[in-house]
Image (tube, rainbow, N blue to C red; front, side):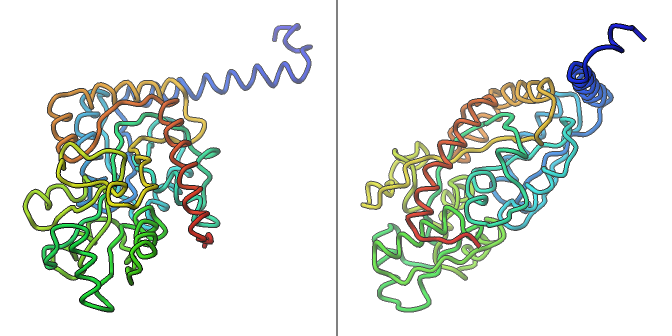
Length: 332
């Protein structure tokens, strides 16, 4: 052993060892990827919903760009909380990522006392792909073609007809329903589901008169005339829905901040692995067929690197922190 190294102070030795270990982890990650090991893409909702469809569209192309299999793993339950906990428990080697929208990262930690993870400490942003808005839709079993008509229908039908499906409890859609009930002095009640897919099934079966979810969740059935999107969040009308007003236009402001979709990794994931995956994401969402598919679902595509996704997440969290606190909601 080099005598100078052996006589170095402890703090110098610790710093050198940390660098050696970091390099070893980075090399291991690179080697695993080079051997074609599968990348695991966690999704917090069941198959059939908008988030799952987007994840599978991306995974199909990412495997070609990266040269590694990309396996979508549905860890459904608790509005994405189960998948987030799985991400925290995963090795930070670049082989496990979480594809999610705002709920698990920005909302759940504010409405659940012990969600089992803390995004700012346990996760790192990798890449964002798009922003999107949530929408209010009515089922084909109601006579309504506008929000005004729906509210009048609920008022005329009486108790029990104001149930509104939401993909998860204590979510942005549920807070919207609560504020609508206050604004219009109606007995509107949020009915939580385990994801948008089962909620959509009940809407299409006319088991529930309305629901709140993302535009990607609703758009295909809206086009088919099986349900009607009657209002959207955001500060402008959506290009796919030029005739559908925003909530601000309808006199219910405060929902202008747009949600996001992005990839997150366990804290400690090597920077090189993050950059490689982010570069692949940028290439995939620029592909014409992917772009057509995702914009057709109602996403506002726009690549965000790790820093940009982190800034978007923080801004969104700040806005919803104020809304949640002003609603009087107490974390459960």
